[in-house]
Length: 631
Image (tube, rainbow, N blue to C red; front, side, top):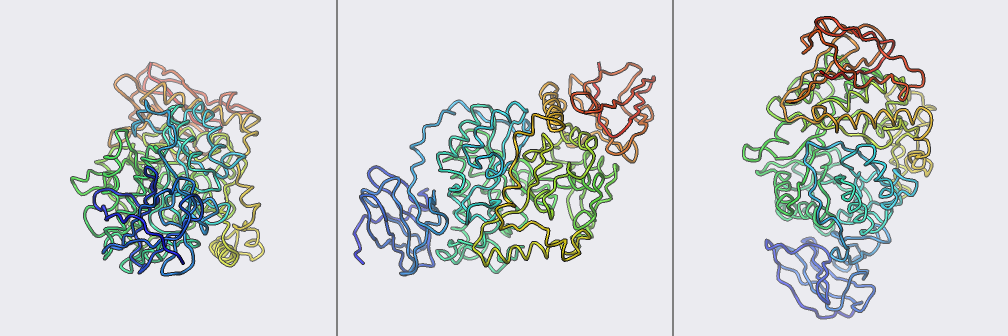
């Protein structure tokens, strides 16, 4: 092996030098944190600088080298102590997959057109979660870009991309990512992702990215070979050892994670991040790694940066001010709303659904607070869960009636609207888009898509076999799958057909029931724009009540307007609001919408509304929703 001599660069920590291959004038700086390597060899495989070089190492295990004549487009890889070739743990692109060589990328070469983009505040968000590979027929960044105008016209203000960090194989949900800085080559090139973000900004759409810092995927996770300190034995997570953010070697792990977040915000102009499973990022130090991350990314750009956490613990500290010990995030996925709605409408009672009655009393309480569990004992978890959210804004709770987990983690990936009557689906949709929390839609629900969203992978054969077996065992306790033959019908995650079934069919949205549901979503979202009182609220509580066993009533107001949303989720019957403490007088209110209008229902059966001196009496022929406005 012939070693070439190049310039050694001193470790710039904490001065800001980045990890990875960073283009410079007529050179590239290669920088790797690899305390597990006694000797790290850089192999440049293409271009004018092709050859093999030994990387200088400092006392912290940072290997740093500037290579003259190296350039964007060059392919390169590393060998740890003479072992097999490995991709850069901070690679910006893996054109041959997560096992192949990395490619030098110059982020400054892209010509952005969003210099006037000012972003949006957290209060304006209507979030649309999508999986790039199944959202469009092309399954690419470019395919998603071509559908952005449809989302803008629907009334969406924020797109949330499921994780795009590169993963093994051709398809994945994204939570098995192992190359955390590299957009998946299955979806396109880094510049394809930049074009997607740039186009979204031109349409006034925020782009949020789902990122995973709580574990690495099971195949192609070479990062621990470079740095054995990346994991710690101090804490356990559902995926095994925890990421090391509070033990020996953790300062550089923390920097690696924060640098990754900065990478997406600065190199891709992302407007924010959704942090996956933050309950599995265990940090016994102060400040918490996620508080430090949030502060760092906000310092990096003058634009608003929106950061949400996925965390089932219902902790107010996630969104509270760091000055009082909080993390300072903008919101948290608050699943209680979904769980109550699902149990009420579909009757699910297994797993975490066992903690819920599925009553309108629970639902109204959830809407009043932002989440339901505020310290009560959870039989499913075997411990007390939640904190009192009465001091935080309602908008910090991100709520849904579908998301990738709540659909895809079902045995067959069926959506809620596949299970319940269309009129109940319309009512639930109206409730979602009028509560004072931040609403999140999962791709396709706006037209009641026929496609499921199933769990799919493309792992190496033996690992894939274990995943398939594990999937069938996971659902063995469910009555519908207790029979071995029934379990065999659970889709194989490794099969091409499982992925293809999950792809949206955009052609169906313009016909029949799909078109009527789409019209309802468009109207509901236009009302949110027309009447700010229907938006996400800065108030710390909401006005919601259970009118009866199947009906919830939500009062929304601002300085200039008052609205009343009456949602009957099951069955027909009378709802007498004159017996409630609503803000009614003898004057009939204006009817803004009913989900039983001809443009929304094939066989409309609008409720009858009679006004008394104390308020309306509504008679529903079947489930539905009504929005009323004070004149």
